[in-house]
Length: 294
Image 1 (cartoon, rainbow, N blue to C red):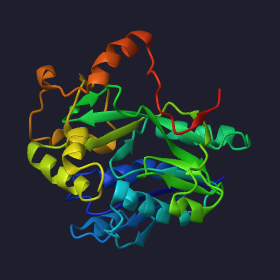
Image 2 (image 1 turned 90 degrees about the vertical axis):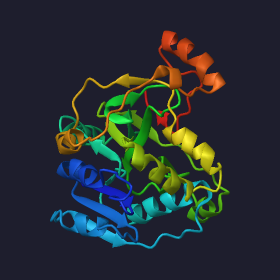
Image 3 (image 1 turned 30 degrees about the vertical axis):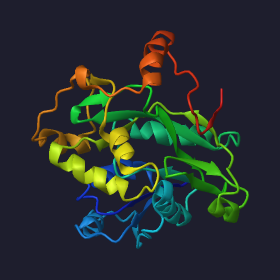
């Protein structure tokens, strides 16, 4: 049984994502790691190459800036890396996601335990969304709680929408032209959370990231992307431990982030539904891009 990691990145240093930590966090359970590295100008490619990991293979790409609608470029780059893997299982990690060293081998064990069960096409992992600083997490109904990050190779899987998740397709051409919606994977859940750091940024970096995100989306308009990305509704203090690979970054935070509930940005529906869901203990009508095996 062979596990292949795959990812994509471009100008990781400029955008402030912990891509080196992300890749190092999954290497212990991967037999190879394929990274599609876009045409970067900030030393991203060189830094990945300097990890000196025999398992890492870099695919050099040039981003097609015409693929802006709905973040299609992210899905395209994900698929480029996915198509190059050689393992039995595909393990996706994004450049802003890190796995804790206490959890990484839970993932390998889950794959080993279910390798012969053909019902299990993949696995979902829960997310911890850090916000503003390394000591706050966003916990409202607006954030995705779980997503597919691991699945069997050979199922004709493609990145779904802007690379948030994955589905399997009968016809790749139909996937490309948008005439096939794909089929959700049958999955189990592994209690090994993704530490999601994309919104940990100082005040100066926020506007830079907002402009970068807006450049890859024609719809929604930039101002809506900025609100969705940097506005917040509910944050809580993070009381756990960060992955060891992230300790230096956590220590180097040079800004103070304080959560002010009075400045929280709530959509009307969410403001009404959040207390109801908190009382019930689950999200009403939660979107799930997978089929959970009971």
